[in-house]
Image 1 (cartoon, rainbow, N blue to C red):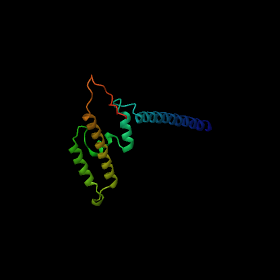
Image 2: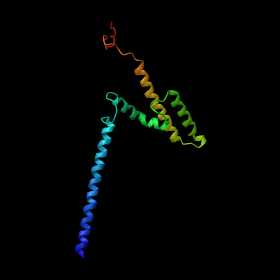
Image 3: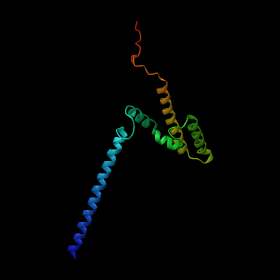
Image 4: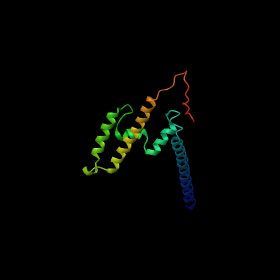
Length: 144
């Protein structure tokens, strides 16, 4: 009887040990993938803007995707549509009307993040790029 009891305990311990080891491996892989995504090395993003985008995400606490989800707008949405969604959600979540200040804050941060991205896009589009024959250097300031 004791022999069978010991066998059950040993087999149970082995099964629990294997499951625990497998869970640890999966957790380690997930943390490595998350760290890599935070560094901007993975995913479908472009090359040069990753550090700038990551810096904006850290500063504002939201990614562009999260901001779009909060305001329920698509990447192709116009400025007017974004502003309309912002106004609607901000008014609905007014604390005086029984809304949530937390959600209102999230709506505000989402609008702020999208505005920042739109201003960067318009800034990039409005700066003229030099043609092939022109130099990309800035004019030197004269020193007297």
